[in-house]
Image (cartoon, rainbow, N blue to C red; front, side, top):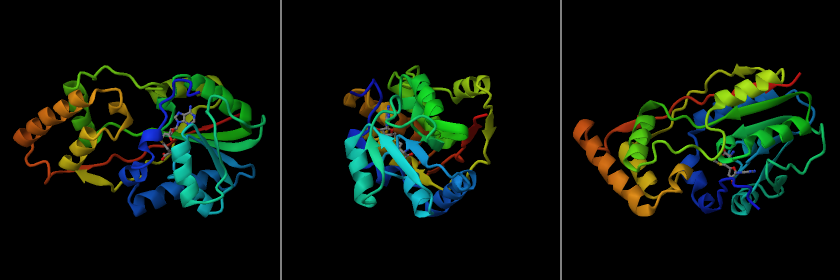
Amino acid sequence: MTDGSVVFDRAAGYYDQTRDLPADTAAAQTALLLQQLARRIAPVLEIGVGTGRIAIPLADAGLAVFGVDLSAPMLARLAAKRPGFAAARASATRLPLRDNSVGAVIACHVLHLIPDWRQVIDEVLRVLQPGGLLLVTRGRRDGSAGELQRRLRAAAGAEHARAAGLDNLGDLDELMAGLGAPVTMLPPVPNSASRTAAEFLDLIGDGIFSWTWPLPEERRRQAVAEVREWFTETRGDPAQVRLRASPIQWRRYQLP
Ligand SMILES: C[S@@+](CC[C@H](N)C(=O)[O-])C[C@H]1O[C@@H](n2cnc3c(N)ncnc32)[C@H](O)[C@@H]1O
């Protein structure tokens, strides 16, 4: 029962080590979200809550927030970090919630994983109260890590592979505008995260990121070897070159 979504069972053991943000970036992101959400009386739902990377700091700040996720191992990690945190194993395409019961919905790095993302939006519209908020972000592929990723995809023959779900947030902007909820770009959150190119290449070789999961291991490792060679020739020792992360861009849609 995964409705074709990319479920993160296999990532639960390493997700937090590989995705955690530096403290200053995480704090700035939490502050931005709190600014948007704090005055809401009804609870806030995070779809694809995972290990609680986004939701736990919001709950710690006093917000009534709960989550759904399709991955039992990711939810088990969340429960280990915050026993009693309100979360349910469910798909965002079929939310176990009453109509008009939620003040805001957060979707962080999840809509690109769900083939029927339009059904998710239908569900979000059903459970949100009038005037409710939808806050969305997706990891970006620009910056220096983005260039490396593009080369890795090309080397692995996956340059044209599309995300399982929503590939381009512009499509969501269009859909929401048609519903009277045009997008507002929130101020980008500066991201102080960085890794060396060697660390990034190792993560790809180890199949840490979901876009690499459909690739056979041999092809993935071969692509990493090719790109490591290109990098060394053109940029220098991958262990010495740091890749900076892009700012985090949140989008806000407010229902009429
Ligand atoms: C990249 S993780 C993001 C987790 C969290 N939002 C964060 O930013 O750290 C995506 C999560 O969405 C979950 N997921 C994928 N498809 C889903 C669906 N249809 N309904 C609910 N959760 C889903 C995955 O299992 C995974 O835990």
